Every structure is written in C-alpha cells, then in structure tokens.
Length: 197
Ligand SMILES: [Zn+2]
Image (cartoon, rainbow, N blue to C red; front, side, top):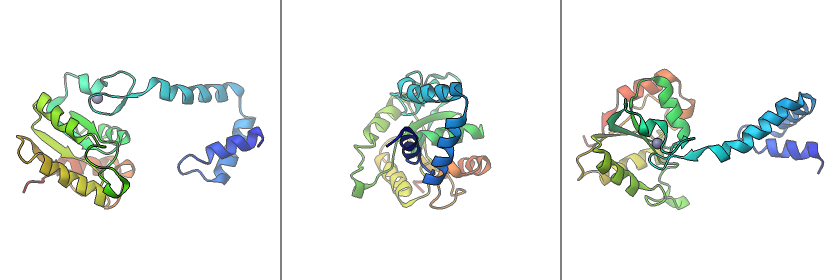
C-alpha cells in the first residue's frame, strides 16, 4: 500500500466518510501547505495525550476534575445524566442548564454485555450522596435503550432522597441529542417530567 492509499484507508474509517470523500480529502491534503498537515497531525496526536476523562463526571477534560465539576457558580443540587461527552457540549450550548453532569459513556444494553456495573451506576449513587444532589435529570437519548436506562435509574434511586426527572420528548424519537437543535434541547430540558409520577 502506498502512502496515498494508507491515508485514504485511514480517513475512510472516520464516521460519515465514504471512500470517495476520503479520496478527495487525501488529494486535497497532498496539495495543501505542509504546515497545515503538520499542525493537523500533531493536534490529532495530542488529542488523546491532553484530553482525559474527568474522574468525577466522566466528561472529557484537559484538567481533572473538569471545570464544570470544580465551578463555584453551578447549581450542585442538579445532576444531568447523559450518554456521551458530546451531549454535555450540546446542553452547555443552550445556556439553559447550570447544574452538574454525569456521563455514562453508553446506555444499558444487556444483549451487548453492558449492565449497571459497566456504566458505573454505583458511582452515580455514591456521587449523589457526596454532593447532596436533589434532582437527577435523565437526558439519555429517546431510544429504547435510553428510555430503559432512565427507568433503571428511577428504580435505583427510589429509596434515596433524590428526584429523578426525564427531559421532555421534544427530541425526535429514536434520535440523537447530538443532532437536535439548541432550541429543542433547551425546550425539552425546561419541560422535564418527574419519572416517579
Ligand atoms: Zn467533571
């Protein structure tokens, strides 16, 4: 395999990139300014070197604990539970939410071997005790797995002094929060419902 093929093959493994787009990109990179390629290459290498998971909330961060966990102006009564670090970014972009987060890095999927232990749900329970959390907002995606994860967490907290709410289904059913627009995310946060009802 020559160098060009190597780059095309690597790029085509990126999500959403077919062989055709990968080829177009590889040719573009070949023609482009060498300093651009160097900066891009180094930035990609440093991505994993510089960014770690926050040991408190699981979000991606350059400092551990992350700036959200250590902030003094956040509402520490609230923890919003999301599937992926990108969801934190989506919710932060609405400017609507001032509480804390908990990133599951997945959802319950027993058939794929993802149970409560794999998601570290005991850590979430411990955390709510440490923080004195009053409300958990389930912002997992409106999919079958996202919904069953939310219901599992309701049961997990039924004897704890914590209210569990679910963001309203303003998001497209089966959809991904990542692709929802800011306004729908803000609206679904505001119209969240108590899951114990
Ligand atoms: Zn954090």
